[in-house]
Image (cartoon, rainbow, N blue to C red):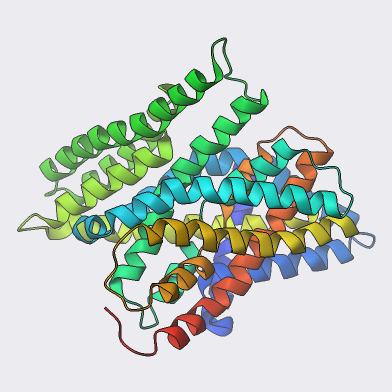
Length: 417
């Protein structure tokens, strides 16, 4: 596994260099496009160089995408994203973020699931409703990695930016809880025990979501105290932050609370507590630099791996057709799942519909969706879910990611509050 990880890391570094020097695309989009182009060339030459083709297949399989993301780099990515978020600004948008990450995810899950099931029936595909619902749960969490890099370069309001970033930080954890709850309902969960269904789902929510938030708060304050007491030793401060993430995520898994939510809360507390110090010094600067670099490294590995995994899927006409329909379904469902919670709140802007439109188009899907799809038992239905998930993820990252900047400029050409 270490050899495969090292090769993917080297590829990510090479592609990042090429993108920086010549392509000039947002890094994640550039890496994904180059990875897709690479695997296309490798696949086309598989009859000529079968050993080379099999070598790349073995690399992707050996890395185990699901375990690598859910049990590894997700913790680093969420902590790195949260540590730079201003908690005061986040609190100003707490109700929109809360509703988007909870009610919005639930609305999107059932709307996507129902419409996808209907679309599959319409074209004569055998996709049970429970698998359509699982697809709705895994595709509903948004991934801001690519879009935030673009939004920083255009005239977007801070209020809208924090909504996108805050929602995406929290809805990964909520999405995992919803996905696990549907697995319990379907009877496919390995953790199902005797007892009423409603009790099991309620217990799951309390343990995973509420427990994750509480554990993250405790972890964050402990980590902050350790970093603060060693801020005259920047290298040790960085080591403590790493231990907080790695040890904290492992412990969260052991006590069955949400690791993603714990990492977000811990990152918010540590980042904002350190920012509040009158003398932040070298330790704070080193922490910022270290986590920015680590964020870039793991993002690069993630998007290269997404691209290089594409050739392992099997597509036919019906799957491609359903994937195309699912693009429209996911976008419509995203609009509805944002519009309904947003309409329950009071807003300063004169045209909230513009904000909802940007939040809809800026709701990119990423690695978390693919990892959850990979966690399903291997059969024809799970292959269908996996394939259409890939179609959605690639469309959202490439098409939505490349056009969100232009859409923001067009809709917000005039300054708004």
